[in-house]
Figure 1 (tube, rainbow, N blue to C red):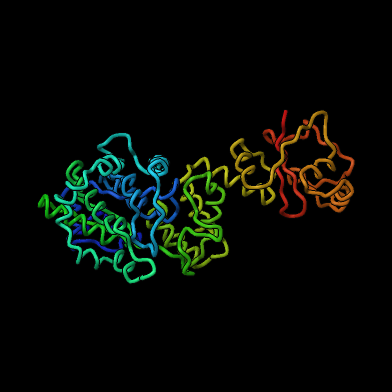
Figure 2: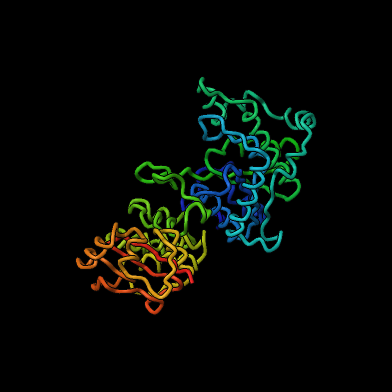
Length: 422
């Protein structure tokens, strides 16, 4: 009999591998505590981290207890998995600051109202005070160097003679295995999930629990995702798409999802939204029959951005998008703030009024008053998306339609936001 949670992972495309053929029965036997670890290598997670986050969120939705582990301790070591060269070691201060930021981000995805519903822990709480000799004597003896060298994360680096692997990173596998043992002992955690590059680390933890506690623990890995063009998912020409709004704004994230290729959009709807199979199948039909409408991309952008930044952020993003495509609607304060972060803006004191030509010059939409008059005469100047025809026009407080701001445009897409100082 298939377990509903595992079946959800299967049809959505989350399931890469499992450590047991009877994992369905294991999940059905009892409510499980399931953990995923996130090392604080930066002060924000990125879209590439979303698969394990969403997988853990599905676990909670199916009645299991997610355990979110922030790697404040392992982050000081550095995971060699999937890396061709040694990581730059973080200072304790940076690791702590990054861990705190990531804890805040992860708290959006789970109901953390009680320890019975979900747990969030930081492995610095037990790893940083772990005596080295005790650890080597009590736990290191259970690890075979021969077996460790067969793990992909180690073997690949050993084959790279110019890079190799330091003892520091070589020991990472032991640290992660000890995490699994600690969580098994103290929180009854019996399942670890992670990317496919974590397979060796998960197996080490499973084996350590068997050897020391004679207990059963299992693992699930997720695929490492690329787009249909071979690009690493969550990457743009500018770099990673971050979950932190200060690094990647909700508007930029929305646009990233909106640009998803038809070949990827149905797969991404399964992975990065909570929409059910019937709704996704309907959208898949639209992709097949009416791809020019890009309805699936719009739904993906709205749903995924809302999960990360909230429904209000999506409303502001969609309003901003409509305005930048010519809508004359009045935005909210939040939409104005969002626009100010996405298009050039200039603070201006209107006073008793300011000539439109002066405003164009002060915002650098025109190089001179003469150039400003020519733009207006040519019909290329817009105030709140309304064409301006009078070069002698003066803008006063009475002309302000938006909260503390005026939208100027020259040509089709050259926008500028005037932020009013009173």
